[in-house]
Length: 332
Image 1 (cartoon, rainbow, N blue to C red):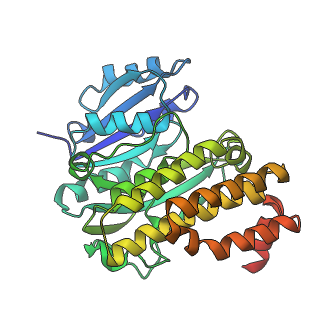
Image 2 (cartoon, one colour):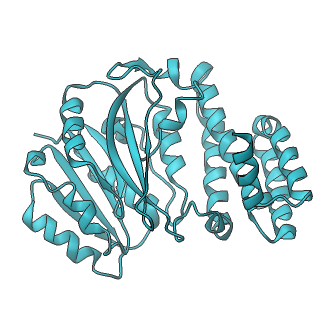
């Protein structure tokens, strides 16, 4: 019998954190119900040895894939290829799950037929231990199967559909040959966009599952790392512009796809114009990207023009990441 849920645990040099991650899955109730695929992405520390201990002790839950380093996308691709579960989700090796709530999720997924199932997460600050719970807004009806096109463009809801909260039918990933770019960061948004556009139905659950460790200066979402890895974000952005240009859809789904990618483009502009302390380099990056966008997809070029002008103006008056955050706090 195939498991109910396959979990790809993307792991690269996470020896300090992996025990906590895997312990949260090491529950006999998950035997044969949860397939935890630990993808050791060419680690040079003891990640593989730690993972093997869990495989040896709980062979009905864990399996280990050792591969050459290929980045987060490569680890996710390996997980999709190996997945046998009805549903699939991703957990990073330095994060963990709420075990009791995961069991409740498994019970729900066993009976569910929704293409997407979205739950809730908590962020945990690695320095202070402070936590922040991301609760789905009260207007969303829980345990109810929505038509995806019915809710995908509600601005208060779509941000909850993220890599940390999403379980998706594995068959959607396999039948649509979902594969992510390899060797680069920022493929989370690529996974969300490329997979969710194929969904017909979606459910929301008031279950806190994912425990997301934040506060690490090496995290890809640190603004200085956005600048350092600008070329990575550039590749992902251009890949999704190409995907949207070729993907055949209309109506609400087209609006959803365009909105998500316009948000990505706006972030890309902020990285070069507002995050980059080298102002000359940043504006050169932004202008080069705008020239590319005009040729690649004139629709996105026009839809993001106003936001680009705003970012240029902020750039010219000296607004940077810190000042931008202060402006956002004042606007609240």
